Image (cartoon, rainbow, N blue to C red; front, side, top):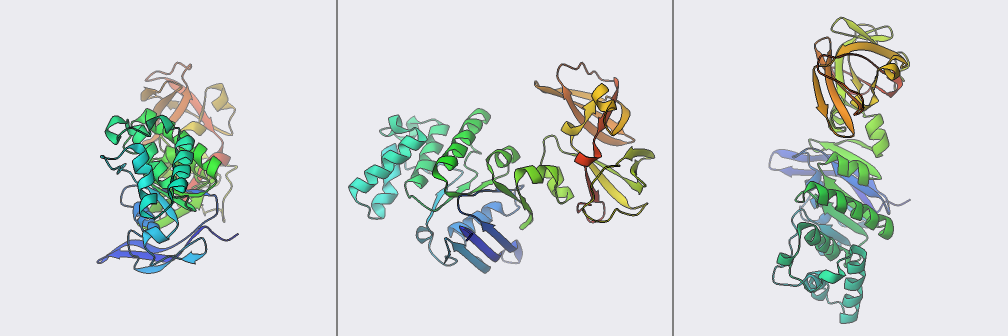
Length: 360
């Protein structure tokens, strides 16, 4: 299958600073790809390169089989939605939706058809006569998305479109964007630093750090099999527990306390005894009480801090001197100072080489 967007050996330098470093990325027709990472990792820069808003230093960008590396943004067959709504304040919603089409020379009937279709899809028909100042934040962002939709582009680019909205609106519009993608089946590339947005929206996620894609995979595989310590720590809230220790047979010795790992599936050869490793266990993969005792690995802990979170409770403890968090049902009465038996299945854990950070 020919990629909808293909990026080959893409580099971008600002003076002596290498922002993007020989990136390769293929995005397939109809795919929803999310670029995820912390501030400064290069995700918005990469999106702006695809859009033609930044000139690349090296490499090529192909959209729908055409080399667009040096094409103007208007000639790339893209629609773009920015973090700021960037609506024309003096124009009505209908005027904002139709303005780009008028400039491009579309006929009146075609403009009307496209505006009607976009407003129906986004459920903004009652707002067409209003000015941006009369709209809520969520409504403005819908109009901004509509302005991209009317272009009828092959590829849609979203640069953190929900970051200016409150949590409830973000959640609502996230569902709308997913529904929009399922309906249109266009290729969409979406930038965010919000892992919940990434996990819920994406077909695949590209996790970036320092201008390099660390892992490109499905949300399921990134969550369950992170390729390195950075990815493992970035995905998950609260973060994965990291226990530093040394290999000894089928255990990792953490501050003189052996933690069993029999059943862990190594990607390569099992490390030799004495190798420094980091054992990663997600708090939600830890069972408590009788369920913990039934796990392949179980041990006793004393609760130090309790964080009620409504649907469940997050408890903090320690293994040796190292922090260890676990989730438990909110119906379970967990108090500070309580001594509990917890357990986990090593088959669901992750292990990393301490020196290099890669998955073992």
